Amino acid sequence: MDEWVDGNDRCLINFLVDCPDGLVYLRSADITDIPGNTAALQNLLDGVIEEVGQQNVVQVMTCSITSWMFPVIKQIRKSHMHIFWAVSASDCMGLMLEKIAAVNDIRRPSKMRSAIPFLILESILSYKDELKEMFTSLEWKSCFWSKKVEGQEAAGLVKSSSFWKRAGMASKATTALIRVVDKIGVDNKPSIGFIYETMDQIKEAIQYEFRDSKSGHIPLWKLIDEIWDGFLHSPLHAAAYYLNPTFFYNRNFHLDTEVSSGLQCSVIRMENDQRIQYLINKQAAQYCRADGDFENGYAEDEINNAHPDLWWSVYGNRCPELQKLAIRILSQTCDGSGRCSLDRSVAEKLVCKEQNQHEQHRLRDQMFVRYNLQLVGANRKKRNAGGDIDSGGPSGSQSNKRRRPG
Image (cartoon, rainbow, N blue to C red):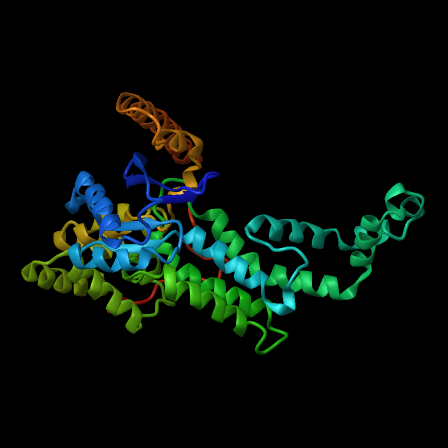
């Protein structure tokens, strides 16, 4: 779901479906009059779920964390136990960046609400010596701007050691996050199999950057955990981490309570047949030991050269129930519809209440075609671009050495 407030203070939503071929636009809605009406919002979402087909929906993903959503989430979970709910990873990481920017030790005069200011800051840091030299040069002293208040403030900032200290801390705190935001959604390859490990590696990278201060990383970790635990994390992430052979057969794989419970939660909610649940757990033991065809896929080249869902389609044939579950989970995305950058003004015209029914139908058909043509082009471009989220994570700390199955 792609939600926003337009220039007329209307709360609008675009509904899109993520499928193997990429994003597909479904419909738009004006929910301005119903944010506090949980029943009305649930009916709207139920209608979308029914249109797609309950059996085809694994998760519902939103791009915002507005308060009215939480009662709706609770009701949807009751009526559709098999459906998971998550907030877009890139939006959550953007929120992490905002919170990091508000930390007293690295606060800047202007509010930073996206990755762009941090990237600019990183560029400024790379030209630190040149900037200092420029603001002490004869050319600057004779320059028009050196006499203006703005120029004098800029010169004072560059000459300030505290500015460079704060800028350095901000860059250290955000480099790993920005790298991941940049990677998510670069192509149509699902990223859910990597997000769980990637978040751990982001925290490790931040800890490393603050290695000169034993506790400097702790406030930043708390901010990241607040967003992760409150909005981003889903049992599907833990299950995808377990089912991703890149991590599972790595010597650094860590099976803790969160991972095992996430896997079991996913099994129980996605498959209500207890006989199938039993078979999945039995086959998981074969996966753990790398028995049968899993042994053929255990080689480092086989794991690293195939995306996790494709790996399962090749090497999971002798465990069909587990294979089906693994492919379904690993085919999911962890990023929302905001990555498609649809022209929202088109939807704003469609939901105008002054239009007659005939005009509404015409615009709806026109928008359906226009949006989906745009998405087809975007999906094709991403497939041709290639690339993937680096399985080594932001710090490259993930060792490629295999662990002994068992």
